[in-house]
Image (cartoon, rainbow, N blue to C red; front, top):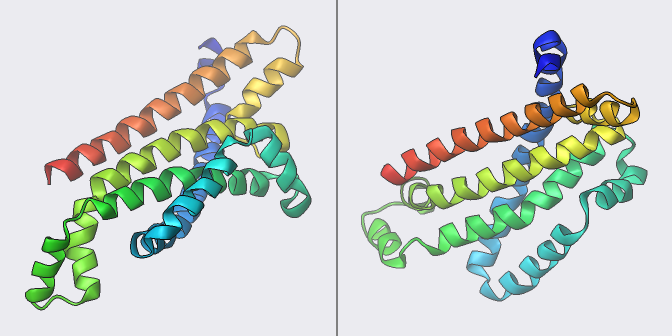
Length: 205
């Protein structure tokens, strides 16, 4: 804690780098996951093989996956972001698919009978009803992404993991290790709480 209090500027800079990586990865992951979820929702037989492939990707250790990505994306934050996107897919696609499945077909038929077009049914019926489940998936994916971004500091990606790896490399710098651990844990807790609040609001709505 003393290190955090003595170096607030550095910790804030590393926190911003960490959040930028996580936000970028989750944004890309959502753009990819939504069409995949819609695809398996409409073509049901694709659900099993697609989720199987994504689950296999999820079992690959993050350190190994980032190393495999380095020849294509370089020893930098891009490899880490791509790894976060890949890890997030299994969580997001599954939750988006479950959310889509939870919408009663009778409600969509009723909306269609009221004259709503496809876009209106999606925006006014499907999205609001599936939003709590989707936010639950986003919350889990965000926590996973924060953890992977921490490991990414070893590959020159920056972020709060820098404190951890510098503390390990510099013998006796347990203050950096504790500072990095506390900062990452606090960030994960804050993000989880914020998304949990949004999820609660969506369920109440």
